[in-house]
Image 1 (cartoon, rainbow, N blue to C red):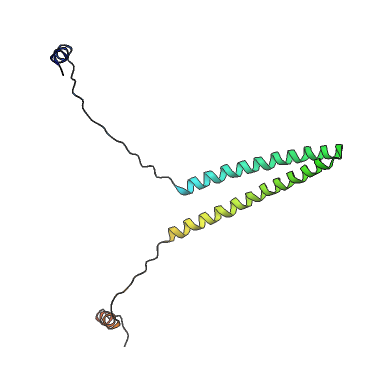
Image 2 (image 1 turned 120 degrees about the vertical axis):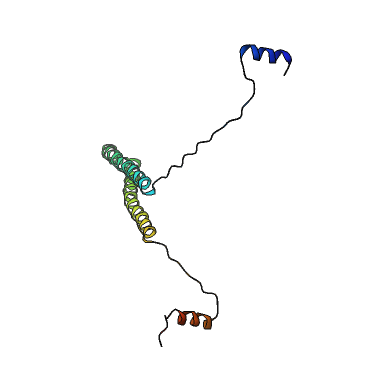
Length: 138
């Protein structure tokens, strides 16, 4: 810095030193998998119910139009719409199945972990060890 800057800083009582001070705050948010799964399940289920209901309304309309016009294309569209609504209703059952599978996985994780132990050594050493601890029958 120049002498002028120093004088101005002194007159204005300004500290020109750059202080590097940064603090990082890291929040670890532990998300509960089961809560997320349940929220997603409810959201998907509500959306699928809504789609099925709207599909039913659309089917009613297209069937009425098909009867009035007796046009083959209208009947074709009605058939496709019925199939689509049926597939959507089937997805509701798939969601149920997937939720049950996820719950089963969670239960298996809660049961505990399996520990596999490996013994490295000869059988005679193992027998000596077991005899020493009194675990072999004679």
